[in-house]
Image (cartoon, rainbow, N blue to C red):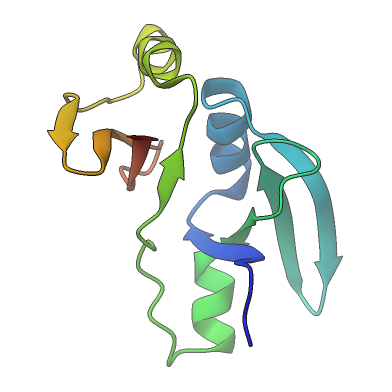
Amino acid sequence: MINIVGQIMLYVSNQDEAVKFWTEKVGFSVISEENGQGMRWIEIAPTKDAETSIILHNKEIVARMSPELDLGTPSLMFFSDRFEQLYSDLKSKNVVVGEIVDMPSGRVFNFADSENNYFAVMEKR
């Protein structure tokens, strides 16, 4: 039985730009960086002890190795206990940020990374 989401695979065109975006703009940390089998993958997370992390993979290399995979952006929803502060912080760093929307489960906004992939943030009620 699955009881936790361990890692989310994010396929990007430029891993270094993706790391820069997630660490400098969103405040994530690099947990590890690995090289092997002709691939490089970088693990990032909101904190060093987070239960779930994101693995940044090179989209071009993965497409060559596994052409059957759909390498579109996964839909990611982050939760924040500092919702307003995160929203303001991302805007001040010139990140593309959507409007805050009230949903039945809480307030939500979206933001785009350096490759125009969109992600959502929710302040759960």
